[in-house]
Length: 152
Image (cartoon, rainbow, N blue to C red; front, side, top):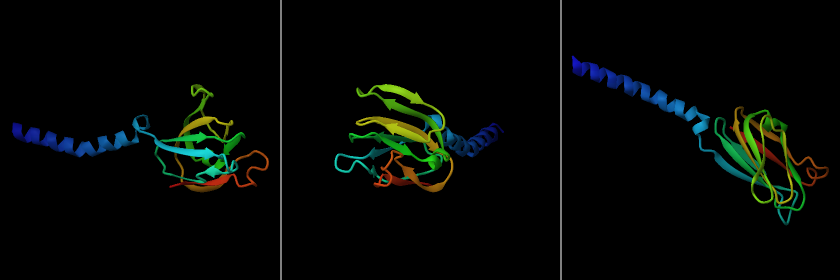
């Protein structure tokens, strides 16, 4: 009888184990972020996003690093992306690489100064194919500083 009890307990553990693992996958505090980098311009063509397309998956934690190596300030703007993600934080860095500020809440646009860097930590919660990524500085979008975001 004791053997049957232990065996039944083992069976319960085996049945519960997959659900415990599934809960750990959904705990965003334990997810390692998928790290992506987008460059806002470069030395030769400062009016482009590199890459100009981001492909993301819902439910994954992303750390998108926005780097601006050009001598002009640029904006990373996408209202549709803002409506499709949960923003954990945006970190802004000073020239010496130290965290200068953290931003929380809905983020529609991030301005990155020349030679600056910002990190956007977010989780996509809605699928879509968005072609509204652009730099909102007058003339930059028309000159080619635009892109696309795909969330699967």
